[in-house]
Amino acid sequence: MKKLIIGNWKLYVKTVDEGKKVLKAIEKKLPRGLKSEIVVCPPTALAVALRREYKSSRIAIGAQDIFWEKDGAHTGAVSPAHIGSSGIKYTLVGHSERRALGETDEEVAKKAVAAIASKLHPVICVGETERDADGRFFSVIEKSVKGSLSRIEPKDAGKFTIAYEPVWAIGKTEAASPRMAAEAILYIRKTIVDMWGREKAMKVRIIYGASVSAENAEGFAHEKAIQGLLPGRASVDAVEFTNIIRAFS
Ligand code: PEP
Image 1 (tube, rainbow, N blue to C red):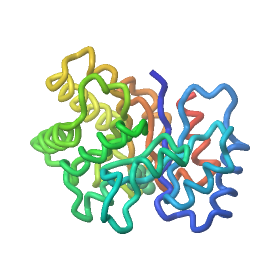
Image 2: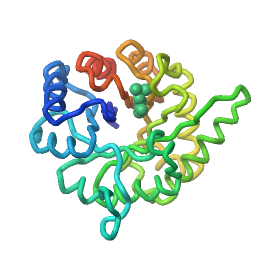
Image 3: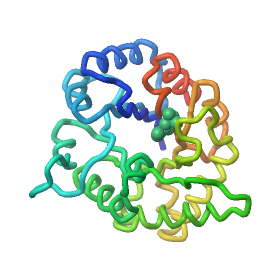
């Protein structure tokens, strides 16, 4: 299974021109012989424009979110079909910044399954908001994984990725330690084994996100359980982002 490095640009890049510059700068510094899938997720309007320009790039473009319906009275929504027909192949779903606005595991499940049905690869974000010393956060993760995957068929185990993103470490100066991240990822794997059995569970790629940087990426790369990274801020800085990629090459 290929590792995945997927950058979440959030609203950090303001215009299509700025997006082109960032993408070009990343492309220029990209290491040869890439071993990982590389994706950046700009805001939707920019993602569509950049996808049009960068068809043959080694960097794929993803969306930051989708809605689950394909049709009907849903003003402002962007459907998986809109994204897919623009040539975009990936989308984040269930990011904590969407969940903070009220998105539930059930809605994340609807988005994930709608993405798969439209041949998009959803990266489903899960993670606890805080850690307690007694390990109760493990059951928070388990509940969110079970809820967010509830509509996905086990046969589609290879068609999505889970990003373990501890909310308390997002946008901070310090990430979770590689050990903490690996433990949570192993717990997520065990949860999927309980749901779908070992064979299917081993097909699910699980990555880490939250305050990833060029400095800490190597530590995450050394943990076998961690199959890629989801940097936010660091993904709009070409030097930082390509050094994160290098750590996984
Ligand atoms: C994120 O929000 O998905 C994220 C990982 O952000 P940052 O790297 O800036 O913490």
